[in-house]
Image (cartoon, one colour):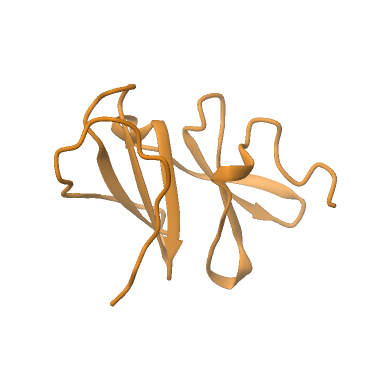
Length: 109
């Protein structure tokens, strides 16, 4: 057990292992920041886009983070890919879906 590994605002289920063994998590008052653990500190590297900031789910594949969420409860789901090299977001096309995404994964074929 590592004490104080997460910031108080981070949710353990939002943690994701990234390239090079780096740990990423959604942090902030509304979990609307993407932070990376560097040494013993968490550093915010990107702001979660507003239209995925409600109940977002994320996963990492390669050097990209996929985030799915909505602007508010019950709203249509939206998706983005965050490039973990330059921390720029790209919106992805989504099938129309309202409701809550319980979990996510990436399958590369």
